[in-house]
Length: 132
Image 1 (cartoon, rainbow, N blue to C red):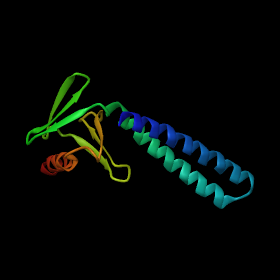
Image 2: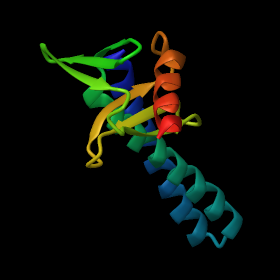
Image 3: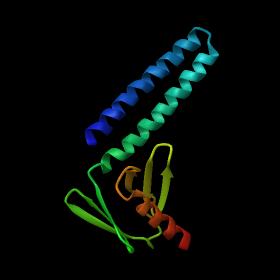
């Protein structure tokens, strides 16, 4: 999985460069439509690269979820978080990633939607935020 994500980030970065180079070529050829299409595709691809870069540091993490909160196992250590810790999150369904932040706005976890029991984890975050 780690290799696939890293390779995907590199591939998408290459695609973004391709689209942006052709956007410049299109404008040089006088094609506004070609420029707009290639520029939008290049920007979207860079957005996907940004999401992949956010995900990479958390690829080796394991998550355990229960009624009280969750634990993140990373690098030989573990951190516990309770649902009532005022955690914020941004769910990005189009990119299939979920970012979790502490009260200070620091990223504590970025996961993709394909992990086992993702919906249980997301439901816990939603319920904790609904209670506040």
